[in-house]
Image (cartoon, rainbow, N blue to C red; front, side, top):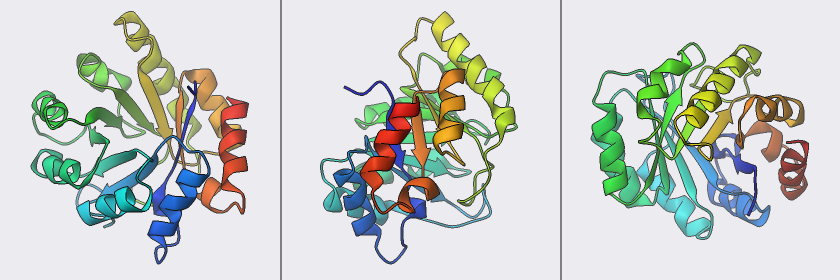
Length: 220
């Protein structure tokens, strides 16, 4: 079993060849495919829906589907994405809704659940939920579109979440990072306490994605 997990981000795949992008990630030995769902309200962009998750399940049936809901009302749509095939569903800490009830509902539908922090959101926002989640995602760019530069100011947030998880008796909690991830930034995030890495542009730009997946694990 891998100690460090690598998830290619489908947002960086050729939009006309998304099924091929999923199959590439599976063939490369990735741990899951990361699917960003944007609602054009919580973030200024519109992206994938449940049909994309269902497509990913068909195209790469052995590859778990890590679905990130960048949505103002994730509690309204969570069930649809799980029914479509989401293995893990990640929801944000920032909007106003019942986070604890939504996390419980996700688990009740049979999926793993996680909570996401935007770069400017303090780590303390997830502390009340550390025993309710399977993973925490610390965004290392502002969510909404791919290809942004990594924000090193998020590294203390990663450190704080890891310390809090250890203190809460959750030393194995998955702490994921997403945004501007490459060999250099992944190494810095791993040193801060992250153990799962979403990489879009870095991996999909490679002719040999498998080599990129191995390299990311190696530097961590």
